[in-house]
Image 1 (cartoon, rainbow, N blue to C red):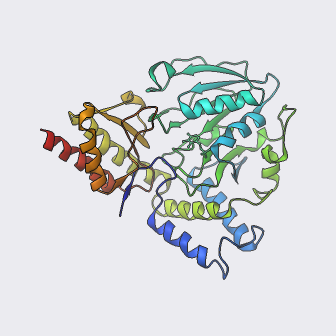
Image 2: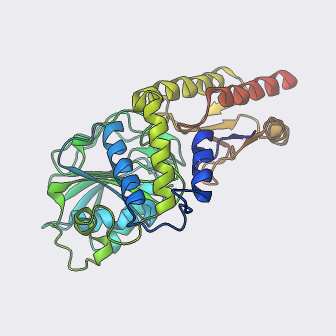
Length: 355
Ligand SMILES: *Cc1c(COP(=O)(O)O)cnc(C)c1O
């Protein structure tokens, strides 16, 4: 068995892999891959998935849950198009690669983007603070967890304007206040399910109010809400496996239970990084992500040996993103504490052999 620290597509519980595999062979006598998305069997799956999202995140009344295609990358475009109002301006917080992606797609659909806070000056190794949120814009956008750089917002940005969040890499990892947001979106493949579905949690009040002159049918969230996320063929298998994963989450203490496990896992690794003299973390301590933990070898000359050691221990996906270098341990919900212990033990062992 490998220990998967990959940044995404993500590890899922073994029971979910097994149940999903069984449904490929037999789902009410057919394969889940060949059933009609309009069949009662799948309509039930979609409804259960939507309802589990609402339970897991305590989604208040007045919000709809959608599973669309296109990934979080199309979410950059969809959110900008749907939130465009009279000013055609928006405020974005730039905390790294994905936030930049959201900024450039908003510009591409004609939004005048005001980047009112950024951590680009220090290669995104912190979360900006002490900024003033603009008031003359249609909405505010932020990225709750920065998958590549390893920083995470510990507080929701304060604003009375509509608030949009890309939660691709930390949704379901800890409790959130959905009511502070107008749209939350997340590619499934980081902490929810297999690639293919993108989760949207949308406040119904915002629907149908866009001032964009350009609004293709698929990109208009109102059309999807009106059709119960069945405007066209949804990503059936990804929705099914995500539903299985949400069932498993709810059976294991819900988001609160996951948050406790994630706190234990991240604290085990950060403690090792902070106490082991051969390693150092790359981001400001108070802004450290619980999902993607970035760190470096203080002396790169030990790199080949360390890489060989963690490879031999069955660890995969530890290589850092090229824009940061070093290592990145992604610790999504399904990664077990025992896998984290394997990693900290390898780090320890490496230091002993160097000692
Ligand atoms: C991975 C990721 C994306 C891109 O997701 P796709 O579904 O591949 O388009 C966007 N935002 C964040 C925060 C991510 O981690």
